[in-house]
Image (cartoon, rainbow, N blue to C red):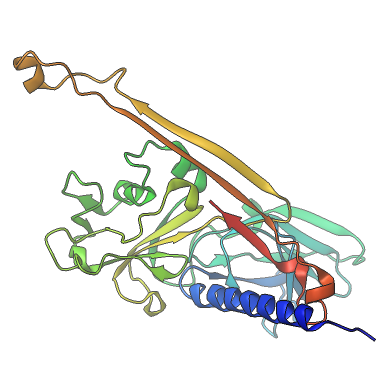
Length: 323
């Protein structure tokens, strides 16, 4: 028999309420940034295989979800966050097949078709996503471009605002010196643009219809706070909410291992040229020294199983990222 003191019960209830709030917030924010992973399971002759068990495993957290192919050999995983995954399929009379390094981008459906070879299920055939994953989005008519974490961190950004990278994409025209303000996408008005961060609208609505309308966020994200973003320049879906063009940013997420980093971005005028008017007036160039410091850390949340176990929480499925 388990016994808890009043203090322990109160602590457990408060902790449980906090976790529930976090879970509900995550579900609410997953409406526009999550996507689907679909595909068809076939044999080597091209015939569909119904009833095959398909498993989707997150490479970062090692968490898995299962589904079964229908009578048409089709399988579907909903609410999949961006990242790298492994898709495994198995059926009686066939070797198990694993497709590794499946890249899922923000809000872009991923299609992974799996072929099974005849044999014992104990045998495993491993392939890479380049052989099985479709490079063309056949699920909808959205025209999208994805900017990855390496580009966000490596490309020079004045002010370290990753939203400015949207102006480098095809169809985006910025007519202001203020970065992405007054930006038009495929000739549409700037008021047609919208920005979301983890599914939450951060577009500056006050300026949406004004002279500075464009890609202007209320909460300017930092480089370290964005793992990837997708810009939809045409045919945005109804689930995306307001805006015919969408910029969708996602925060980095924790993994099964603790990882962190410290950074400093330094900028000075060592190789800057003086302005024309300063030279004409025989003035020195203006001094410029900027330093930006920060950190990022993520990993699993280690909750005491004695407290949360009786409440029904699986403490092995909680992760965090902070910066």
